[in-house]
Length: 442
Image (cartoon, rainbow, N blue to C red):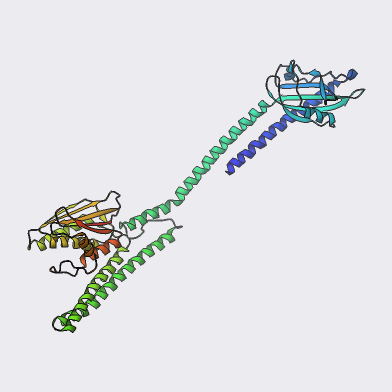
């Protein structure tokens, strides 16, 4: 914008300068005319015309004329007495306003625009003088083609705008280059932070300019502090688990050895406390791990390890087959321990309640932001109401099977902590279909 305003100002200034030079050139011709103008008998004559050859060449663009300025009832008028040969048989017209200025002026030069004999755009200078006896007012006119001056202005403007455009482009290029080079270290920090977030690096290890080294040092300190906070949370959770589980186990063991309503009450409450402790400890541990920056693990090996373990465990009780179809390269954005717990709970339920066939499928979703683990079995399955109830904490739909009714609830809580979800439905095998969706790492 500044360059544009400067360009307009320079172009306008140059145009005024060119027109002023043209006006000075026209004014210099008046000296030649004045030296040769005579008024014998009240009729103007010119004894010594200007010696510029252009005044002798027809329609050359340089013209002059000498006329008597007469006053009349309809206003001043001209009686052309002398004209340059370049005018041929034409004359320089003067609008009434200019004639009035000449008639009432005191010899000042009046400038105006007019159309020449060959359709040229003329710049005209006119001056009125009083000569002879009796006094006769003589009007002198000198004109020049403005197109030559305007061509110079256009050439200057074109050169000026081309130079300003080149200057602007150069400035923009310099600014772009400066920004790219100057901000390149920040882009490197951004890439390194992305590596930390994806779990490919624990800290910012690059070599940075001294201007941003304090920033990277603070970021590393923040990462170390976050890691320390997570470790302390895990330690406290583990300590709390040991501190609570032992007295609860004592209460349960003592109450089982006694009979009566009091023992039954203690047994029931202690069992409820144990379930609550397990649930909230699992949730606290999962929350601490979910907040850790950079955690990631490869999902297919985890599923295959769990499947092999469960086949050995339940293969003795039933003819069990677990089919695992996992897309290679699926990276879970979270702790391996949490993925093992979620997938392990789902597969263990399928093995426990299925009749022998369990299918596991893992694949990325279309948006590449999540992947899903689908576990299907050929067991009795759940109704729509049962699927909702199964996700409630401590809800056991089958009292004959061992457990505390926390597995699916823990899976659901863990999935939500990671921004995922768990959905239960009917499998094509006839049993339960558990669909677990989790965030995928780059």
